[in-house]
Each structure stands twice: as structure tokens, then as C-alpha cells.
Amino acid sequence: MTEKETLQRAADEARKAARAARELAGLLDDYAKYLTQPSWRERADDLHFSAMSKLRVVNDGLAACSKLVAESGDDLPVQPFEQTVKKKITAQQEVAGEPKKPTARVVRKGGRNE
View 1: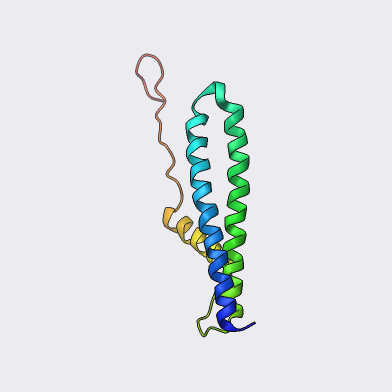
View 2: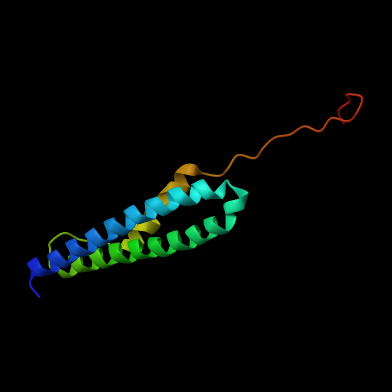
């Protein structure tokens, strides 16, 4: 397979992932709408399952794109998709730092502190 064909396949995979991501956005929007309505809770659970499946399709598509680009022989170093995601998550966690502990003061009846 030539470099051009490989990159064309990567572009096709990227388009599939983009289409799945748009569908995922619609599912998440409907999920948020139904989640707040108790009578629609079962429908919200079904949408959650569908959204997770669609997210898996998006992730698989992006991983395939990354792999195809790496196989194309392009001179650009490409990190595996999983490593990129882990690095971003780790960076976000470092920025967030430790959560602040809530402070509370216990006061006994009568207003005396001990």
C-alpha cells in the first residue's frame, strides 16, 4: 500500500470518527434531557449505553487513524492515541491538584467552643 493510499484510509477513518462523534453529541444531549425526568429514567439508561458504545467507536476510529498515519512512513513522529490521552489526563490532574478540604466548626448549644 502506498503512502497516499494509507493516508486516504486514515482520512476515511477520521471521517467515520467525526460522524460517530456527532452522533455521540446528540445522544449525550438527549441523555441530559431525559436524566432529569424521573418517568424517563429507563430511556436515559438506554441512551447512556448507546453513548458509551458510540464513544468506543470514536476511540477506535481515532486509534486506527493514528496507526495508519504512523504506517504511512510520514516523517512526523506520531504517539499512539492511548498515550496521548493518558498524558492529557495526567496533565489535567496535576493542574487540578488536591481538592481542598472543607472546613467546619462545631459549636455546642449555648455558644461555647471546646
